[in-house]
Length: 517
Image 1 (cartoon, rainbow, N blue to C red):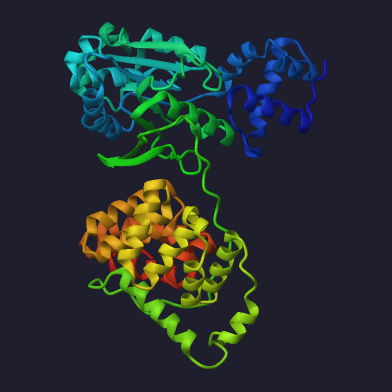
Image 2 (tube, rainbow, N blue to C red):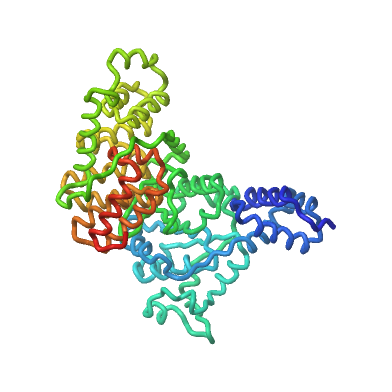
């Protein structure tokens, strides 16, 4: 039997895992993949070629179940991210109960339920918050997972103290019965959940039937999927949700670049999603990424931003400085109209025009960039990149009412647009709505955790409001994120300042708030 594996063998095995289970393992985890391959070759008595052939053949589905048990090790516990269950019981379920006609049952799905802590938590909060529809059978909970071993644990309903570490004492005493060193879940809660062994990638038109579920919990599962698998499963969930149904992801997960079939919602200090009204069952195509560009010319922010002035004021002051540079004589002056005309080619497609406008911003020729964007052909109105660039330029030029209206239109089409949320935050601050500004900043930071500018703005807002602890936290995050922020985003959203100046601002503000810088 062939005992030695080549890297190509391991990569082929990884590809088979991706195709069968949707699981994604990068090169850093290739050794773990290799160890699993060795174990299964030994267990089946096959060499590499024969085992890989088995995976691709009729017996592949059965072997995939074994691999799911070995490769999906998800730590979970009762009441994990409890704020999501408060949003569920205080926002999502009351709305769905009101929307359901007559006595039609409310259906909840726990997709990737592991050993059952999540769906049983759903059953407990449903029983405690909505006892009448729960007891009447109007609330039905389905839980699915591809791991048979964990499903067997879930059905048994027996858990150690560690699984109950976040469970309120009153809930533990009411619904769990001590049994040796473990706790057994009350039979009334166990009966409320139906468990099924299911691979989320498998086609099943009945299970994924349109408009089946009111709420789907799909938490801490997608992070293990390949991008293609994540998009496929999210499309099925979007189709299977009723119009206005709710989707809850893990705390560190979001749908940016995955799906535009949902509205972003925020309450109870957590983000979640609601299916768009009029969903047609077709997944939308994510907007293309903005073209990368070089960073702007050097500039240093002079001193700390006055706490009595807004960050928008600082951006506008920078824009005025840029405008003065454009108008001044010498090498820094903008080219003459004749030179501009000579250099400007015949009207290219929208994408090329956008690149030209971004290049003008990089050269700090803001008014010319605005001219280019304003002259874009009609089809640019449907291009989110073109509209985002226009909103950024409008903000820099102080035309904030126009910028906010444009951001609102962008977010109506795709409320996972982090840049539009950030610009809307600046507009809200200028309008004197500090909480509205912070809400948009929080959304931008959630949608794109690597985006530094909303963190910076949140820190400045918090300092102005006297919340120094929050200011220190956000500014500290911003200072770290700015070191690796995309040059294009610093260009578009940094108000004319370069990376070093923004980092200097963060550090100075941290010191002013009593933090270490």
